[in-house]
Image 1 (tube, rainbow, N blue to C red):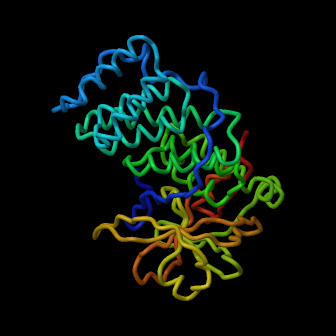
Image 2: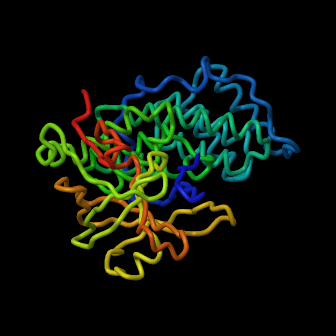
Length: 348
């Protein structure tokens, strides 16, 4: 997935890892999760070149599964994996068995181990899709709190690292962070999810919720903002932590951002960085997102808002882009003849 900007700039997702201490099983009841295998496997293929001493143990695992003793089968699989920790078939079988037993943490760990050692690309893709649905089911559980929620956030982030990008996973993370009252991360993942058709409506609702009360109070019914013509496009004045900036209106940009030149003039705006990769006409460059305390569009405040650093060269005519992360929170009209931006509350 890429997020389009003007001037040929594309931004791909930021990946990070949230570390949490180990804990007991999640409290999600097993009936929430669809079984990974139904019925349980009884004739799994043994790993290639199985040592003679290990063949009886593999046969024992098959007999236990055929008899429905998944608890003992899981124990035997762990013993087998102590001797053969890189056995993809054994990790796959353990992941399936643990999932059917409702042991979410053990199952997810085994799925990731399987993905680590499986060499068949088609099997890897199938496992990624299965694990995605499994984690999304977990994310929908109403009994997910505290450390269990942090654990799930970490697992979804780990899975995102294995995908080209996935709007549904970003949307799940946005909701989890919103429930955790982490507005910055909720906003970030909602912005990443808004670019996927299947997750766009829900992501837009999250973005509207993050600043909804302040926006409605400042907006009233309708607000009209003067624009400055820039060729066939328009510039709008905003304030970023009290600093004036002229941003190019870009309804194709999913994220708003400012240029390198603007940040050189106001370096104190960047208090934290979330790494991203930007793909430009001349190739990929590393960049970052950062959070500003407040951005004002006319009288409307956007608190704790994420902006992108846009490497757009020595652009002097404008200071950055205003995208749909802000415009999309309104019903808006760009009156080209009058050079006015008209904003009104979005219809529910």
